[in-house]
Length: 112
Image (cartoon, rainbow, N blue to C red; front, side):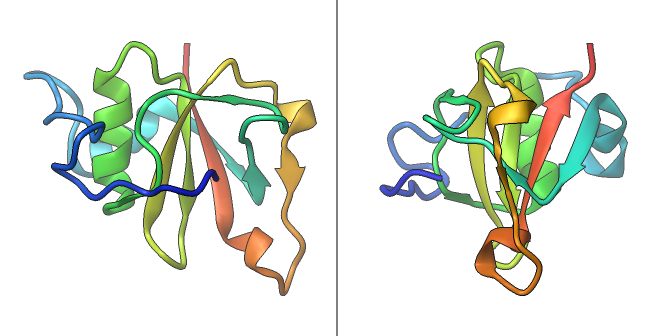
């Protein structure tokens, strides 16, 4: 994830999900999870707006789902941070190492 995290409601933070967007636990059925993968510029993905939002994972998922530029997101479990991604190529993403901070990242991609 890139530096320069934005707090919810800050400029560049996503707006509320569109009406009819999935919410709560239901949102997860719209994503594939890739545990331990961190995709970011130069490592398998481009930024797609939101960067370093401190939100619960389900809210991040709902916001991404409502954003046509967001094809998926990286979520850091230990800090509850979210980064929107697009142009995702999983084979080039960073693989987390067990016992290291890098193992706290998961990549979620929208199901087509």
